[in-house]
Image 1 (tube, helix red, strand yellow):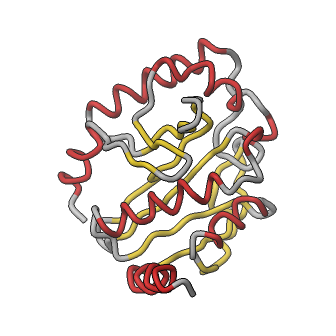
Image 2 (cartoon, rainbow, N blue to C red):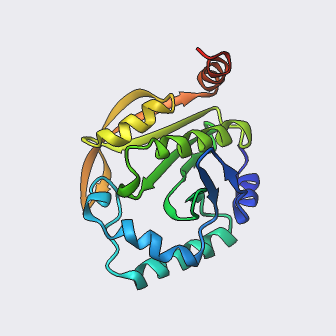
Length: 199
């Protein structure tokens, strides 16, 4: 992976499509939809950021994201439902390890749309983008201990448990444990071949 290539790509992130979702850059007009889930304490229970206090805070966050896009330093897509255009969450890259050619993915979804495998649908596409466009050798993801829903998403996407990380994630000024999952490029290729053959 090349840092200049990645920053060039994310200055104007490409639009990606799944069967039910459009993955596109965030817009200021997403503020109401983002606030709908970002103000929910249950949504942020296992996230590193706190609930949004009001819609103005959400708008400010999106403006900061738009600035980061312009510098090629923000790597998330908005998740938009193809059926009605509603923005229901985000998915993208949390960090890059250029020495190991690996990257971390993350996602958040409006709880009204839990239970439909939409997070896994988006994350699978982002994982494919990492391998097929960015040239990653592996993709990994983490969830705080106890976040069984996120763990299921990672497993649906073909990631396997790698290790438990003790006191590595900052949550409300304290360190908490996390579970790390990973998929290699070879494992991804084998998974795609199996899906193609209908196994």
